Image 1 (spheres, rainbow, N blue to C red):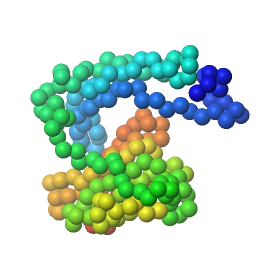
Image 2: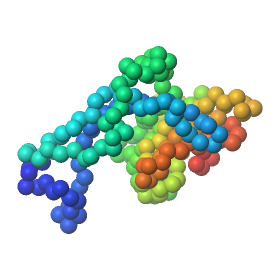
Image 3: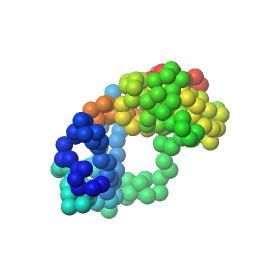
Image 4: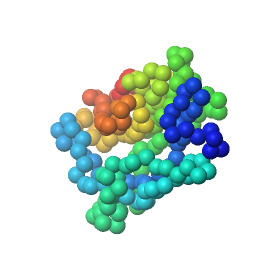
Amino acid sequence: MPAEHWSDTKDQQRGSAGHVAHLGLRFVQEWEVSGKTLRPPSPLYKTRDLVERIEVTPGVQTCASTHRRYTQVQPLSEASDRIRADVTRGVRSCLAVIQVRAGTEKLAADGKNGLAHHTEFKRPDGTWVAVRDNLLNPTHYYAVGKAQQSDFYPPGCAPTCSAALCDGRRAAGWAPWIICNNQSRHDMYLTLTKTATSSIRPGC
């Protein structure tokens, strides 16, 4: 970006847009359900270091201030053997990539074409459920059943994650869950079906 077009503040009259840059930091943490609350029984561990300065335009180097919780993260090498093994050799249960035809990424069946983040989970019968959020219809999930994971998602608050839970509290021993965070991105929550079912219900 030419330096003369850079602005330190958002200027909508000039048509300025936000600049997205990856700060390098990647971290992992163990979480558990305690009653009706999610809590982290472990500290944060980093697998990559935080980048302190980024040249966003010639001569302008900046980086937003980061909460010390993320600047004073322990390296993964200091985690327990169990956590390190889970991170380095574990199998991911959350699949955050879905198949979407080119040009249909934002299309929704109700005409509110603001579909954004996505996730999916596998049901016991081998079929799949893809879940999207909609920036034009916040607080609502958009979901579709698919026969195979490779099928395209048809036109149908922040990044979601989902999978099937082997849950001993359910008679069927299975229930889908979704982890997400609110629009301010300050709170994370988990939704879980009350009963195992093969049908899709809004909001899981």
